[in-house]
Length: 284
DNA sequence: AACAGTATCAACCGCTTCTGC
DNA sequence: GGCAGAAGCGGTTGATACTGT
Image 1 (tube, rainbow, N blue to C red):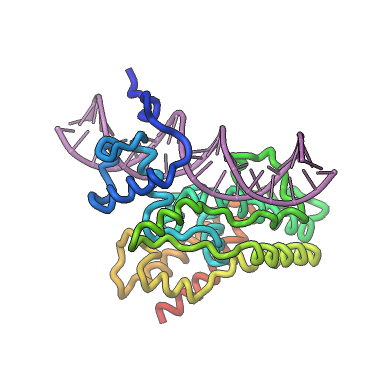
Image 2: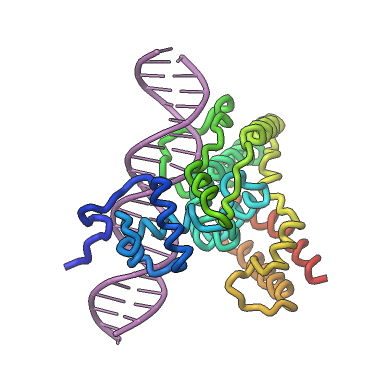
């Protein structure tokens, strides 16, 4: 006899959260702290399952979450870490403390995967026009809405930023909670898409230069704040040196791994070199 | 204006892992 | 060590917004 799913109970509400529900949840967590999710619905009177409460808090109500506008540095981090680990969104999210795993997963599925496909096309046409078997296909998961077509050049940047206005409304009601505002993304998207298209015309995807351009300054800050290894394991003094050593070993191992695709190896080589530079600066 | 197609993202589902007994 | 319940995770879905015809 298996355990019935918590959300199958009669009277449990599903679907989008209302601002009122958000306020109740946030107020409760402010008083009692996150955790013990099982008791949340009973103690708050919310007609939600514990799972739903946890998800709502983790992905949208938790303080310090940054919404929308992924920076080139963040994109680079996601692309690099996804190439290394695959779809380990929680692990990837641990390196981007202001982002949730759900947000990263969505961003990967809706933006980055397409960009990488575009990049592969550019590589295929540029490097192996007559023999595609030389360069195996990318190891990108096709899960999700794979039936949907690539965005056309003319409508690729038509989507305004519609990030949860309700969450922002809640944030206004809750003093001290920092949910960032969502500045206009449209113009930036238009510019980057323009650059991307121009780049493809030239045979080089300029947008991907920004995707893979790890900002040494940001990396530096991250290293200093200890975000690179969030679960510890190194002392402050030798952290950078240890990371550099590990990265070199990892890079060598990865490059020797015959199962890696052409793109994987290229990605590791390119971005890892930049990372190593940043880390070496930290050591020195 | 109406409709179809597409992109986006919040939320759900089911499986796995963790934790306490 | 084994079990049950809780929590976490990743894949998927559905509602919605937007564009093009």
